[in-house]
Image (cartoon, rainbow, N blue to C red; front, side):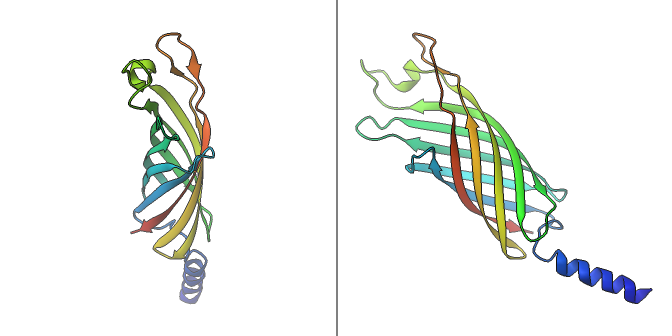
Amino acid sequence: MKKIILTVFAATSLLLYSTQAFALLSVSVGVPVDYSGNSNTEGYFLGVQLPFALGLGMDSHKSKGDPPQEIVLETNMYNLFYQLPIPVINLILGVGTGSQEFKCNDVGNGKSCSDALDKGSATQFYTSLGIPIIPLFDFHISYRMITSKNIKWKVSEEKIDNSGSLIGAGFAFNF
């Protein structure tokens, strides 16, 4: 009986060696690479996963337009995600909610973007695929689909559709 228990334990340990399913805590950090074809995007993604595969995250990124005006679309999101229990890879599915806002210095007559445009709400669905390099460390890429259709011009109440997709890359550390 002891041999069977030890054999099952050893086989399970080998099969689940590269997954973080038994990690007490996982912390991930990442950066945006491209927002709907605009590679002039900067910011960060943070995530903390709890032992039962659920996690919380926060995204903050800015996509800059071309000079001379340099209009910036600033996005802030709060996320809830779940890691699927798949050995060998770390597959995460998540949802998020937050806001998008245009930032700029001058849109004419000495007014800024915040004088002409309201802040709008945004939602996202995302997935992340992580490849463990060693048991306590993985590299991952993510794809986010952002929906934001309600930033309004203050004068006309016309809404702007800023929906798009975001690709990111990062690392996760398991404790």
